[in-house]
Length: 261
Image (cartoon, rainbow, N blue to C red; front, side, top):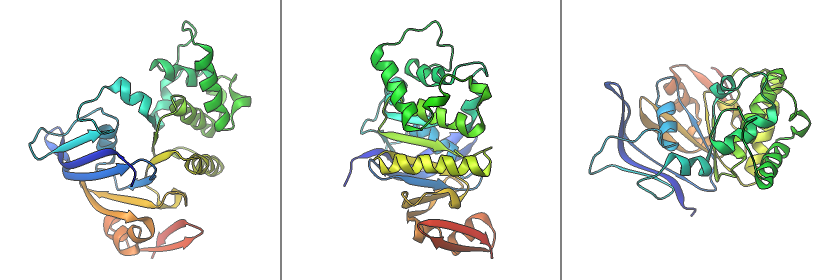
Protein backbone atom coordinates (compact mmCIF):
# COMPACT_ATOMS: atom_id res chain seq x y z
CA UNK A 1 0.00 0.00 0.00
CA UNK A 2 1.30 3.48 -0.90
CA UNK A 3 2.39 5.97 1.74
CA UNK A 4 -0.19 8.54 2.83
CA UNK A 5 0.31 12.20 1.99
CA UNK A 6 -2.58 13.30 4.20
CA UNK A 7 -3.54 11.77 7.55
CA UNK A 8 -6.32 13.35 9.59
CA UNK A 9 -7.78 11.78 12.72
CA UNK A 10 -10.44 13.22 15.04
CA UNK A 11 -9.89 16.75 13.73
CA UNK A 12 -12.07 19.78 14.26
CA UNK A 13 -11.52 22.92 12.20
CA UNK A 14 -13.42 26.07 13.06
CA UNK A 15 -14.78 28.72 10.72
CA UNK A 16 -15.65 31.53 13.07
CA UNK A 17 -17.92 30.05 15.71
CA UNK A 18 -18.94 27.13 13.50
CA UNK A 19 -17.04 23.86 13.09
CA UNK A 20 -16.38 23.46 9.38
CA UNK A 21 -14.95 19.97 9.99
CA UNK A 22 -16.13 17.97 13.02
CA UNK A 23 -14.29 14.95 14.47
CA UNK A 24 -13.02 14.51 10.94
CA UNK A 25 -10.89 11.53 9.85
CA UNK A 26 -9.49 10.84 6.39
CA UNK A 27 -6.39 9.32 4.78
CA UNK A 28 -5.24 10.08 1.23
CA UNK A 29 -2.40 8.10 -0.33
CA UNK A 30 0.10 8.54 -3.12
CA UNK A 31 -0.87 6.72 -6.29
CA UNK A 32 -4.61 6.82 -5.58
CA UNK A 33 -6.59 9.61 -7.21
CA UNK A 34 -9.82 10.64 -5.49
CA UNK A 35 -12.90 12.74 -6.13
CA UNK A 36 -14.41 14.75 -3.27
CA UNK A 37 -18.04 15.80 -3.56
CA UNK A 38 -20.59 17.56 -1.41
CA UNK A 39 -23.06 20.45 -1.38
CA UNK A 40 -22.09 23.98 -0.41
CA UNK A 41 -21.15 24.11 3.26
CA UNK A 42 -20.13 20.45 3.38
CA UNK A 43 -16.51 21.30 4.28
CA UNK A 44 -14.79 20.85 0.91
CA UNK A 45 -13.04 24.23 0.94
CA UNK A 46 -11.88 23.78 4.54
CA UNK A 47 -10.51 20.33 3.75
CA UNK A 48 -8.54 21.82 0.85
CA UNK A 49 -7.07 24.44 3.18
CA UNK A 50 -5.95 21.69 5.55
CA UNK A 51 -4.48 19.74 2.63
CA UNK A 52 -2.54 22.75 1.37
CA UNK A 53 -1.33 23.70 4.86
CA UNK A 54 -3.28 26.96 5.11
CA UNK A 55 -5.17 25.99 8.27
CA UNK A 56 -4.63 23.51 11.09
CA UNK A 57 -7.18 21.66 13.20
CA UNK A 58 -7.91 22.62 16.79
CA UNK A 59 -5.16 21.41 19.13
CA UNK A 60 -6.31 18.24 20.86
CA UNK A 61 -4.42 15.24 22.29
CA UNK A 62 -6.56 12.87 20.21
CA UNK A 63 -6.09 14.80 16.96
CA UNK A 64 -3.63 13.83 14.23
CA UNK A 65 -2.92 15.98 11.18
CA UNK A 66 0.06 14.99 9.04
CA UNK A 67 1.08 16.14 5.59
CA UNK A 68 3.65 13.95 3.83
CA UNK A 69 4.32 12.23 7.13
CA UNK A 70 5.11 15.46 9.01
CA UNK A 71 3.23 17.03 11.91
CA UNK A 72 4.89 20.39 11.17
CA UNK A 73 5.50 21.82 7.73
CA UNK A 74 6.26 25.02 5.85
CA UNK A 75 4.08 26.46 3.13
CA UNK A 76 7.18 26.89 0.96
CA UNK A 77 7.91 23.17 1.14
CA UNK A 78 4.31 22.22 0.44
CA UNK A 79 4.27 24.47 -2.63
CA UNK A 80 6.80 22.12 -4.20
CA UNK A 81 4.94 18.96 -3.23
CA UNK A 82 1.32 19.90 -3.95
CA UNK A 83 0.14 21.64 -7.11
CA UNK A 84 -3.13 23.52 -6.61
CA UNK A 85 -5.55 24.82 -9.26
CA UNK A 86 -8.34 27.11 -8.07
CA UNK A 87 -10.92 28.78 -10.37
CA UNK A 88 -10.32 32.17 -8.73
CA UNK A 89 -6.64 32.07 -9.71
CA UNK A 90 -7.57 33.24 -13.21
CA UNK A 91 -8.39 36.70 -11.84
CA UNK A 92 -4.97 37.00 -10.17
CA UNK A 93 -3.20 37.64 -13.48
CA UNK A 94 -3.20 40.81 -15.54
CA UNK A 95 -4.82 40.25 -18.96
CA UNK A 96 -1.62 41.47 -20.68
CA UNK A 97 0.60 39.01 -18.80
CA UNK A 98 2.17 36.48 -21.17
CA UNK A 99 0.65 33.04 -20.74
CA UNK A 100 4.21 31.67 -20.51
CA UNK A 101 4.94 34.01 -17.59
CA UNK A 102 1.84 32.78 -15.77
CA UNK A 103 3.55 29.39 -15.57
CA UNK A 104 7.03 30.77 -14.82
CA UNK A 105 5.79 32.91 -11.94
CA UNK A 106 4.91 29.79 -9.96
CA UNK A 107 8.64 29.15 -9.55
CA UNK A 108 8.84 32.31 -7.42
CA UNK A 109 5.56 31.81 -5.59
CA UNK A 110 4.21 34.89 -7.37
CA UNK A 111 1.23 35.68 -9.57
CA UNK A 112 2.69 37.19 -12.70
CA UNK A 113 5.03 40.19 -12.83
CA UNK A 114 7.97 38.11 -14.08
CA UNK A 115 9.56 40.75 -16.32
CA UNK A 116 12.02 41.82 -13.61
CA UNK A 117 12.76 38.26 -12.52
CA UNK A 118 15.56 36.02 -13.71
CA UNK A 119 15.11 32.32 -14.39
CA UNK A 120 17.67 29.62 -15.02
CA UNK A 121 17.69 27.39 -18.08
CA UNK A 122 16.50 24.51 -15.91
CA UNK A 123 13.55 26.55 -14.65
CA UNK A 124 12.58 27.60 -18.16
CA UNK A 125 12.89 23.99 -19.29
CA UNK A 126 10.54 22.94 -16.48
CA UNK A 127 8.00 25.55 -17.61
CA UNK A 128 8.34 24.43 -21.23
CA UNK A 129 7.77 20.82 -20.23
CA UNK A 130 4.69 21.61 -18.12
CA UNK A 131 3.20 23.66 -20.95
CA UNK A 132 3.92 20.93 -23.50
CA UNK A 133 2.21 18.32 -21.32
CA UNK A 134 -1.00 20.33 -21.52
CA UNK A 135 -0.72 20.73 -25.30
CA UNK A 136 -0.62 24.55 -25.20
CA UNK A 137 2.91 25.36 -26.41
CA UNK A 138 1.55 27.27 -29.41
CA UNK A 139 -0.33 29.62 -27.05
CA UNK A 140 2.53 30.38 -24.66
CA UNK A 141 3.44 33.77 -26.16
CA UNK A 142 -0.14 35.00 -26.20
CA UNK A 143 -1.45 37.47 -23.65
CA UNK A 144 -3.29 35.59 -20.92
CA UNK A 145 -6.39 37.73 -21.35
CA UNK A 146 -6.76 36.81 -25.03
CA UNK A 147 -7.11 33.08 -24.28
CA UNK A 148 -10.39 31.25 -23.90
CA UNK A 149 -11.53 30.15 -20.45
CA UNK A 150 -10.50 26.58 -21.17
CA UNK A 151 -7.06 27.64 -22.41
CA UNK A 152 -6.48 29.79 -19.33
CA UNK A 153 -7.45 26.86 -17.12
CA UNK A 154 -4.89 24.66 -18.88
CA UNK A 155 -2.16 27.23 -18.21
CA UNK A 156 -3.13 27.21 -14.54
CA UNK A 157 -2.70 23.44 -14.50
CA UNK A 158 0.69 23.82 -16.20
CA UNK A 159 1.57 26.40 -13.54
CA UNK A 160 0.67 23.87 -10.84
CA UNK A 161 2.77 21.18 -12.54
CA UNK A 162 5.93 23.25 -13.03
CA UNK A 163 7.40 22.03 -9.72
CA UNK A 164 6.62 18.42 -10.71
CA UNK A 165 4.53 17.93 -7.55
CA UNK A 166 3.57 14.45 -6.41
CA UNK A 167 -0.05 15.57 -5.80
CA UNK A 168 -2.26 17.78 -7.97
CA UNK A 169 -5.35 19.35 -6.35
CA UNK A 170 -8.10 20.70 -8.59
CA UNK A 171 -10.97 22.66 -7.07
CA UNK A 172 -14.03 22.76 -9.35
CA UNK A 173 -11.82 22.78 -12.47
CA UNK A 174 -14.70 23.10 -14.95
CA UNK A 175 -16.29 26.15 -13.29
CA UNK A 176 -17.25 28.81 -15.89
CA UNK A 177 -16.17 26.59 -18.80
CA UNK A 178 -18.42 25.86 -21.76
CA UNK A 179 -19.18 22.30 -22.82
CA UNK A 180 -16.31 21.96 -25.30
CA UNK A 181 -13.77 23.46 -22.90
CA UNK A 182 -14.96 21.15 -20.11
CA UNK A 183 -14.49 18.10 -22.34
CA UNK A 184 -11.01 19.26 -23.31
CA UNK A 185 -10.06 19.86 -19.69
CA UNK A 186 -11.30 16.45 -18.56
CA UNK A 187 -9.26 14.89 -21.37
CA UNK A 188 -6.15 16.62 -20.02
CA UNK A 189 -6.89 15.39 -16.50
CA UNK A 190 -7.26 11.83 -17.76
CA UNK A 191 -3.85 12.05 -19.41
CA UNK A 192 -2.30 13.27 -16.17
CA UNK A 193 -3.89 10.43 -14.21
CA UNK A 194 -2.67 7.86 -16.73
CA UNK A 195 0.82 9.38 -16.50
CA UNK A 196 0.86 8.58 -12.79
CA UNK A 197 -0.10 11.86 -11.12
CA UNK A 198 -2.11 11.61 -7.92
CA UNK A 199 -5.19 13.78 -8.45
CA UNK A 200 -7.52 15.22 -5.82
CA UNK A 201 -10.58 16.44 -7.72
CA UNK A 202 -13.12 18.54 -5.82
CA UNK A 203 -16.41 18.85 -7.67
CA UNK A 204 -20.17 19.26 -7.38
CA UNK A 205 -20.75 17.09 -10.45
CA UNK A 206 -20.37 13.28 -10.43
CA UNK A 207 -20.48 13.35 -14.23
CA UNK A 208 -17.07 15.04 -14.53
CA UNK A 209 -15.20 12.38 -12.56
CA UNK A 210 -13.06 10.55 -15.15
CA UNK A 211 -12.87 6.73 -15.22
CA UNK A 212 -9.27 6.90 -13.99
CA UNK A 213 -10.53 8.09 -10.58
CA UNK A 214 -12.08 5.15 -8.76
CA UNK A 215 -12.39 6.46 -5.18
CA UNK A 216 -15.11 8.92 -4.21
CA UNK A 217 -15.53 10.75 -0.90
CA UNK A 218 -18.82 12.43 0.00
CA UNK A 219 -18.83 15.21 2.60
CA UNK A 220 -21.85 16.39 4.55
CA UNK A 221 -21.85 19.11 7.20
CA UNK A 222 -18.17 18.73 7.99
CA UNK A 223 -18.08 14.94 8.17
CA UNK A 224 -17.38 12.05 5.79
CA UNK A 225 -20.74 10.63 4.72
CA UNK A 226 -19.28 7.94 2.45
CA UNK A 227 -15.83 6.89 1.23
CA UNK A 228 -14.95 4.06 -1.13
CA UNK A 229 -15.17 2.79 -4.73
CA UNK A 230 -17.17 5.32 -6.71
CA UNK A 231 -19.66 2.79 -8.05
CA UNK A 232 -20.62 1.99 -4.47
CA UNK A 233 -20.46 5.54 -3.11
CA UNK A 234 -22.27 7.27 -5.97
CA UNK A 235 -25.51 5.37 -5.51
CA UNK A 236 -29.02 6.81 -5.97
CA UNK A 237 -29.75 6.39 -2.27
CA UNK A 238 -26.55 8.04 -1.01
CA UNK A 239 -26.48 10.89 -3.54
CA UNK A 240 -30.22 11.45 -3.20
CA UNK A 241 -29.90 11.71 0.56
CA UNK A 242 -26.91 14.05 0.32
CA UNK A 243 -28.54 16.49 -2.07
CA UNK A 244 -32.14 16.01 -0.92
CA UNK A 245 -33.44 14.89 -4.32
CA UNK A 246 -34.69 11.64 -5.82
CA UNK A 247 -31.93 10.69 -8.29
CA UNK A 248 -31.24 8.03 -10.88
CA UNK A 249 -27.65 6.92 -11.48
CA UNK A 250 -26.32 5.10 -14.54
CA UNK A 251 -22.83 4.02 -15.63
CA UNK A 252 -21.11 3.72 -18.99
CA UNK A 253 -17.40 3.18 -19.62
CA UNK A 254 -16.50 4.29 -16.10
CA UNK A 255 -18.51 7.53 -16.37
CA UNK A 256 -21.36 8.33 -14.00
CA UNK A 257 -24.55 10.02 -15.15
CA UNK A 258 -26.93 11.42 -12.54
CA UNK A 259 -30.46 12.56 -13.43
CA UNK A 260 -33.67 13.34 -11.54
CA UNK A 261 -35.54 10.15 -10.82
